[in-house]
Length: 117
Image 1 (spheres, rainbow, N blue to C red):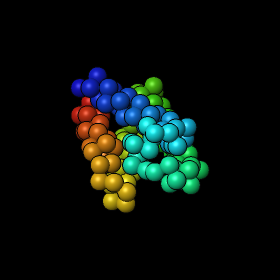
Image 2: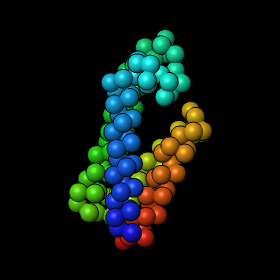
Image 3: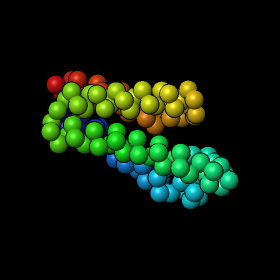
Image 4: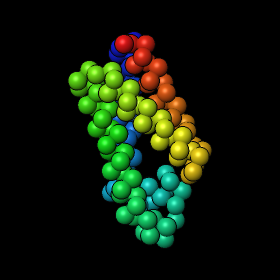
């Protein structure tokens, strides 16, 4: 179970690195606009806000990777909990799909880490 937990935590961290790249560096590109369902006008107008969001996603990824490198289950659980809460908030305020992209994997990761501990 430890291997599965580590794999899930790493995958969630990589997902958040990808989100960071989309939000901080690719926000006005067709790829990011398709991923987030935005228009060129909206993307240009919200570029700074998206970069700020991307930075927060990077902090989530960094925390998850820190938990993996140190082998700290409490650190992993904290950051997985943050991801799950962010996903619920995003699903309620932005797009329900976020629940399945962020929250479901984070909850699975939480369960795996708890079972491995």
